[in-house]
Every structure is written in C-alpha cells, then in structure tokens.
Amino acid sequence: MKIKLQLIIDNNNEYITEDVIYLERDELSSETLGLTLKEAKNINSKVQEIRITHQITDFVAHHRHCPCCSKPRSIKGYHPLIYRTLFGKICLRSPRLFSCRCQSQQSSTFSPLVQLLTEHVSPELSYLESKWASLMSYGLAAKLLKEVFPVEIYPSSVYRITSKVANRLEQELGEEKAMFIEGCQRDWNQLPRPDTPITVSLDGGYVHARKGNNRKAGWFEVIVGKSLQEGHQPRRFGYVVNYDQKPKRRLYEMLEKQGLQLNQDINFLTDGGDTVRDLPLYLSPRSEHILDWFHVTMRMTVIKQISKGAMGKDYANFEKQLLRTKWFLWHGNVYQSLDVLESLIMDLALYSKNKAHKKFKLWRVVSEFYQYIQSNSQFILNYGELYRHGESVSSACAESAVNELISKRMAKSQQMRWTQKVAHLLLQVRSKTLNGDLIKSFKQWYPKMDDAHNIPQPLAA
Image 1 (spheres, rainbow, N blue to C red):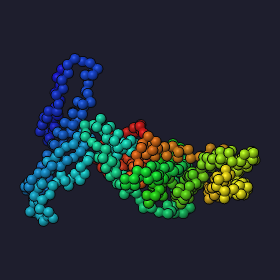
Image 2: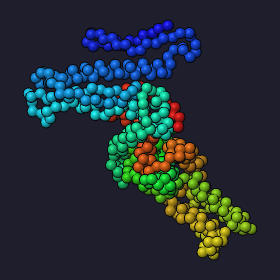
Image 3: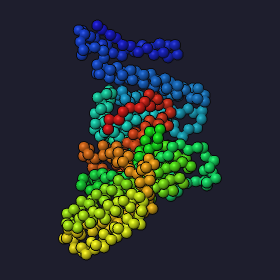
Image 4: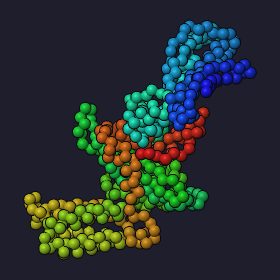
C-alpha cells in the first residue's frame, strides 16, 4: 500500500498543492498499523514548514506596498531569521525594505518580519517548556519534548525560557503594602454575601544552596502556603525568604484569585516562626490567626523524648507536668501553661551552666519552648472548642504544599543546588502550573493563543 499526503492551500480561490510525505506499507502487523511516531513527527514538521512559508510570503507581499501611496517598496536584501516552534526550527528569509519617500521616516530601511516576530520562540513552545520544567528537571523536560515533538531542544534552552517566563510573572506583581485592608465597616456591610470561609496554612521548608562555584553553601528557607475553601480548588504560593521583596502582596493576590471579600471569614494557620508570624497581618478585617497545633505538639514530643534520658527517676513527675501544659494549651489557657513551664525551668536552672550534664539540653529546649509559647500567645486559641466545631487546628495542608512546591522539585530525589534567585523564580512558575494559572497568563500575553491547552491534565510530579 502506498499513500501520498498533499496539502491544498486556498489563497483567495487560488489553490496551491504541496506534497507533504509518501508512506508505504507492506505486510500488516501491529508495528505497521497506523502512523508511527517518526512519521507523525515528519508530517507535522513538513506541514508546519509549508504553512509558515506561505504565511510569511503573504505577509511580506502585503507589507511590500506603501500604505500611503501604494507604491511597491524596493528590497535591499534578505537575512536569515530563526523561529523555533513545537514542530521544528524554521529558518525564514526576512526581507529588508527601503522606506517610501512619500513620508519622512526615522530609518531608511526596515524589516517587517523583525517588527512582527519580536520573540523567536513560539508561545506554545514557551508554555510547554516552562510548564514541564516546573514539574520536572530541565534535562527531563528537554528529553520529553524531543520524544513527543519534532524539535531539537537542550536543557539550557528550557532553563532560559522558564527564567524569562518567571521574570515576566514577577514584573506583573503589584506593589508591596504593609496593609491591604481598605474602606470601613459601612463599606464592608454593603458587599455581597460572602462565600464559605477560607483556611490558609503557611509553613517553611529548606533547599540546598549554592553560591557561585560553591556547591556546599548550606541551606536557605522557603515559605509556602496553601489556601483551602469548600467547593473550590486549592491554591498555592511560595517565595524565598531572604530574596523576595513582596511576600505580603504575593499572599494577597493568591487570596484575591480565591475570591476573598473583606466581609469574608478567613483563618491563617502558621507554625509561629518569625518569618511567617507577621505575614498574614492586615490582609482582611475578618481574619483569625491561629498557631498550628501540630507544631506545638511536635516541640512537646521532642521535650518528652529528651526528658526520658535526662530525668531518670523524676521522669514520671516531669511527664505529668508536661501533660498539664499540653492540656492547658489545648484549651487555650496560655497563662497556666506558661506558669507550669516556668516552674520546670526553675527546677532545671541548676544545670543551665553545666553543658556536660544531661539536664542542660532539657533545660535549653524547655526554655526555648517557653519563649515560643510566650511570643505566640496571642495566636493560641481554644483548640478543643475549634476542633469540636469542625474548624482546622493543624496545618497538615501546608505540609502537603511543602511537598508539592519544594520537595518534589528541589529536594528528595532532585540533587540540584540552587541559588536563591533561581529557586524563587522556579517557585512562581511551579505554583502557577499547579494552580492552573500559567495558561491564563499566556492567554493574557498572547490573546490569539489556542485554547486547547486549557484542558486540565493530571500532574506527574
């Protein structure tokens, strides 16, 4: 069997036929049934080349004549222009035209193609490169693109495109403010009835750092957050602590896209750390800030484990006091819990200067826990009452956000070392991808971009 594929172009009722490919099949088998991947790539590449050639020819012919006097403009010469698409790299013959003398021009010559194609990479290729690079390593993204599409691409190219997209997203971010609450109670009462309450969990993670050629520069902290609302898809955001200059604006815009109104209830769950304690303040007049119960119990578990080896026969009494502290905190009684902790610190104060003694470490962690509860006392509520009413008291969803945004891409099996800038920019693209907003940004930048990409796809990483 022989098959000949042809492309028929209708140019104002003038039909042009172009040969695309010849296919030949001998004996039918499972391997020869239908199109192979190589044949499909060749067909797409050839159709792309033919279509672009005719599009460029029509475009140049249309701009060959002066729009004022309609006289044809002379061609000074041609120069090559490389344009990369999903279906191959196309080398275009870009003509340089002389400007018409009927009007004064700044330059005697110009290139219409250069003015049109300010970027030499198609929007769809940029979109897929940045999307896949946010979900997997740059090398794997390049390999996957080469496997699926007839395109020659390298990890360095994927990195450059992803960085370019991330920088463009950063430039669209609004101005940072200390307070985002606007209006007064009278204005808020006139707003429409709000949607269901929003719960936002904030947590931190750590990424391997590098500085220049130093690949053992330690770690740096990354803050991530996840917003949950009944009947809505969760949303995520993240930023590098010592690099980002607009953390509060970033959180506010995520809540805006979630549909936050100033008369809507919102709960913020944080771990009580210095980097996130002040972040959610002054974002909404109906907000409530809660210290995450998981981090409270995690610190108390560490104290309990250390006390087993340090207290000896006094462990039973120490554990009893620790359980009292936990009970007081669960019911929001900060005063009584601090009183119990203070008495434990006084009992261990004799060992505060003897670093070799077992109880010195116990005294240190109890003192740190005391300072932790004292600095976050205004964020400790009656957890028992909240739990009985079905409210969230733990930031388990923030732990999942750490895993989604940081661990799967920048830690665990990924052995890369990151600069703060590169990690921060990749976080923005990855959060946009997981939220389903990356295609929306591309549609805003390129309004004529195909809507076919706006189909939800399962995330592999």
